[in-house]
Image 1: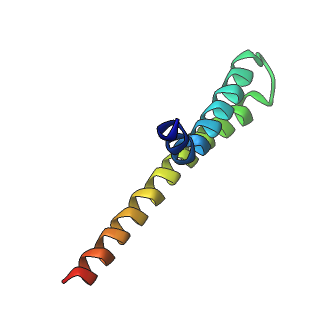
Image 2 (image 1 turned 90 degrees about the horizontal axis):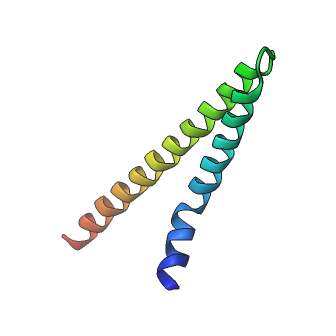
Length: 74
């Protein structure tokens, strides 16, 4: 159970955004001949971009923390 909680805390936001983006993409798929279709497609792509930014920020913070730890050890 502890591992599940840890995974939820690390990836819960990403999973929620992914579900939201998939829902919006399905709505766009079913809107035939609607002017809102491309707006929904762009919103879905923006959600995927947000996930990419979250992973980039996480990687940046981890590298910065490792650099600071290595600097304090020496």
